[in-house]
Image 1: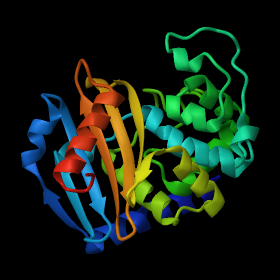
Image 2 (image 1 turned 60 degrees about the vertical axis):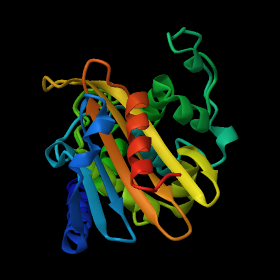
Image 3 (image 1 turned 180 degrees about the horizontal axis):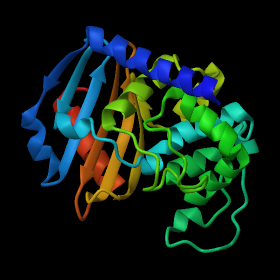
Image 4 (image 1 turned 135 degrees about the vertical axis):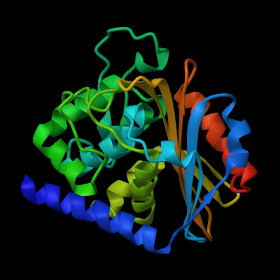
Length: 266
């Protein structure tokens, strides 16, 4: 276990150091109006320009529960451990019949549908299949935030013990998109497929929402993290918002507005 912790720490340090050496940071206070009154942050890394663009730098470096954005790397660990299959049809899990207030959850699910609808029960079963040891090893390998799963195997990412900053999210997404994470390329391709929201005219838009609350008096939080790929460039980004009406859906709208203002999305 100690070996994996050391490797994960080294991976995270190398990732941060390589970015810090060559990256410019541009703060964009003019993005404030996009946040519609929410306390929030937008942070994006432009691979071609080797540059961060950030609104609210302090919040971009604050660790928060990842909520359902963790599903991106949860799926990757599930694929790597053999709990999930690269063939989506072979990832089918039966609904137990207990109704949820979210209608889309009240069906059998595959990895693709569970990612699309952010189905908590599906990923709780995946976590159980992975087990604590392999889950911890997966987080240690990539240096995911504070790597703390003490909140319970089926709850640690849901406003619990696991915390990660928006900037750390962007660093891991960069590694995911450029193939430098210590996972099989085929597994990375599956995850990218399942978080792709649109693809056309040479622009691939990927993302995952997350909604929940924080135990540090910040109240309700909303996340949207992802990336944009074109034939000539790639951008990785994260948005976090906080407030009574914060949600992943609202965070996605803010992210899209920022990306359009920066002429990254049409």
